[in-house]
Image: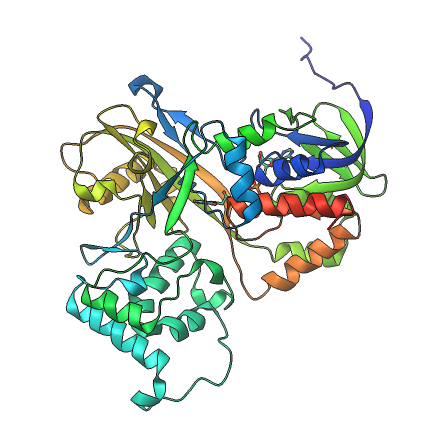
Length: 457
Ligand SMILES: Cc1cc2nc3c(=O)[nH]c(=O)nc-3n(C[C@H](O)[C@H](O)[C@H](O)COP(=O)(O)OP(=O)(O)OC[C@H]3O[C@@H](n4cnc5c(N)ncnc54)[C@H](O)[C@@H]3O)c2cc1C
């Protein structure tokens, strides 16, 4: 019997711009270009990582966003555009985030909230900070060089104690590498830098204003975080082609081959799929210099459980998210969708995302043991109590979730980006641009790509 084999019909199309991927970056580019583009998405809906999945349908349905996706809008354009696109608008929340350390919960950011922790830890943190900010008072030399890596950078800013108890273990758990490997400029925008006064008040328990870029955040009133990409997609003049993957790019002919058999010609190409996968697709067309640079691009995969629970839970279960720097907990962060918007879970239930990275080892081959360990750690930290009934646990992953900003990163990325640019290919977004940024950055990068393509920067 002959196996039936489906050979896609080849069609030829010409577009001024082809956009690979309908995540926020690709959608924003299409929205801002407005005409004469083709946008293809391998999945059957828009949003990429920014999507809401309904889990535990047999228990009434839990809306889970693929780990917490909270919007932090800084730019005027996005503050206007996003609410205007959403029929229900946005709701603003004040962050309720804490760190779990030495069996205590202390508010985020750690560096300004050590009150209530064991006195030895508070002393370590305060003395370390004083030494870092005023080394001469302790007979220590003033640093003469710029910090050589992220570890030195945070030690200069916050001192040895804050780094030892939180900054170093938390970030190493998250990234799965030593902080000496990470460059000093990594994530600087995202790290709150309290004044000495804030730190002292924070150690003595005075109430202070919330600090950091995410002290408040917004979230769609209806439809979960998916509402944002869905609204953007619905507003496009040429609709997204769903279930269609880019499978090959011919740099000389300037064509993209699609999984439906189309060969489409472009003048401009915007890539938003992970840069390393896009380069792999170019195969033999990559010169050695670019292949070598591509090999230096590293990233960490995040694994997470979406969990649905029936029960009231203790006060600790109601934080928006909790950081876990200590190695005895398998996760680095636990957040709760239902603590932010209670409608996301059925009545009497709660939902969580439990994030793990690096160091999972062969646990991944023993999913039942991994589940048991996660539940044990959630109970140990009082996020779950003994009366809570776990309804479902769904394990998912975000490949390349955190790009590793090591000593090779800057030069390797720039080499690749410049080479692609010389072929009229832009590569943007968190993974297309191989960078670290939030949803607003993706939207702004998509817009910047549209401006560049339209010759209107
Ligand atoms: C753990 C974690 C938590 C986060 N939390 C927040 C948060 O709270 N707030 C915030 O602002 N940001 C957050 N972010 C960042 C946010 O997820 C990203 O900024 C955003 O998703 C980037 O969108 P993108 O369009 O660049 O990429 P993607 O969402 O990855 O979009 C790329 C698209 O390309 C498609 N694609 C891939 N290959 C192909 C192909 N061959 N052909 C066609 N299509 C293809 C994919 O399916 C996808 O839809 C978080 C990120 C992570 C990892």
